[in-house]
Image (tube, rainbow, N blue to C red; front, side, top):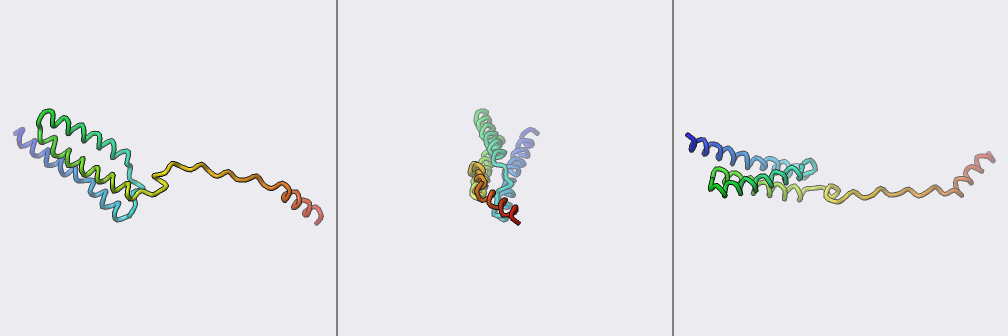
Length: 117
């Protein structure tokens, strides 16, 4: 029974691992990854690496295979997201341009014109 459960879990794990392909498809259709959280994907990536290491340490293919597939698909998703990231999302925010002070001479001249009228 536990072997059948391991196969079912690993099979479902592979399906879960390839689910980011749906995100890749959306990015490619929209030609934008503006709404994709790369930080979230990086956290998942670390988790997959830890699970792979654990699976290797106990020689458990049911842990190694789905997490290795997820790692490959996750790295691909991050690469595609970076490729279609908007330049403004990649660059640090530029400081707002300071507005130059109003030319006092022109302002007082306009005030004088208003007084003369």
